[in-house]
Length: 64
Image (cartoon, rainbow, N blue to C red; front, side, top):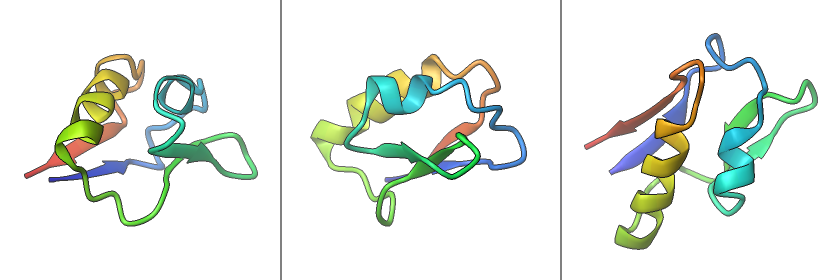
């Protein structure tokens, strides 16, 4: 599985990197970005789902 952020939807609320700082960071504009290649382990999948559920713009996607 892999996580990604739709840059056009992201408004920079920061919930993703607040909830899962090992998976997400922010760019120069304060918008969320995925750290690395976005591939999820069993452990990081739960954090990605938590961030996805808390994203007000629904900008986080988890692909199988």
